Image 1: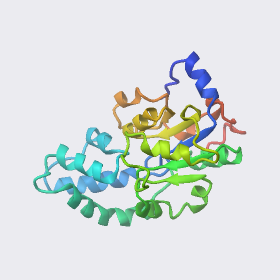
Image 2: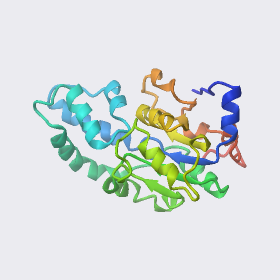
Image 3: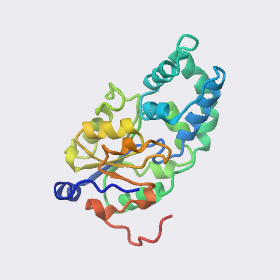
Image 4: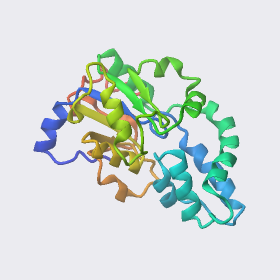
Length: 246
């Protein structure tokens, strides 16, 4: 699955990329499955099922915004408030998050960009308490980021698809703010792709295979996995050994 985007105009833009911003959940860390599992458990009590059309609307948003979508779209808001849903979900997620695994290709790409002097950062809707649980096994990897912007950052007034979080991230690079046209964002969530485009940035989308393909259209490039990313396509330093996809 690849969408190289339209050609001549996009080629010049790709060549101008100097900085990279990563989303985290579902892109660097395999944490989206935990949210799905917990939400399926909660909905089962109401004899309802959790599907990917609903998940697509929740992904990438701030917790309370996603919670409101959840209770309203499923029709359980009279029985369970968004706030109570978050309290119940929290207890289960806290046990799951420390077991988070890396997504394929994430470590390789982060180490490659860092080793080649490309400034990188994370912009995640996750709040600090969850971020610490999710990343506790990967301190070395996340220490390679120039900075990390989380969902509870005071500069992030609105969650994705608002551009707030990506604009905040662009402002904090050394010598910032960085021109959005020089930034490449990696995202898995439709709301995150929209947020990056609303910020004026280019976006590589790495969606879950179960996400409806209609959500792919906004991205500049769509890949099945970070393992498929070719930095040279974006004017970034190429992998020294393109066959080494660890």
